[in-house]
Length: 210
Image (cartoon, rainbow, N blue to C red):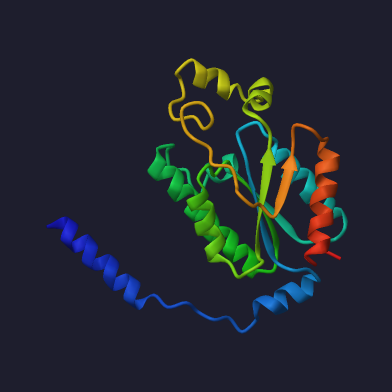
């Protein structure tokens, strides 16, 4: 009985919730910031350097006067996604929530940097579909499992190998590498500074920055 009531309440809510179009538009917000809104979606294995490169890129963009925000996988689990675990279903919901948040931030005219393993192509594709054409850029931070495991900054691989962390990406859960990322960073072969310069060059080519 309660399930039926919950379902009907959800339907009623969906039918009556209407998107409110603000007077100040997305393009006006972006023009004030003198930049093009974009979501840079950093994906890769744990330890590949997603957060490190995204953080260094944000620092450089901020130093040049651009308006940014960095969404980090661990940080969102302290608040927005604190109720989620690490099951396949919870991880999908985690990415869905972050995608919706990134969309709102882009609507505010920001350059959004999002650093998440996000191991499945389908989930990354769903986030891409939330945004207008050209406003989602997949950034593949490409480092081999061997390189990532040798770094193991949080000791997660060691725990996964010991069976303490089930369904760990790269060990007993698959990572689906992007087939055609807008930015492909070979993190095992280049310094962070070089990877940041590569990102800046591509952002300039795509007229995200001047």
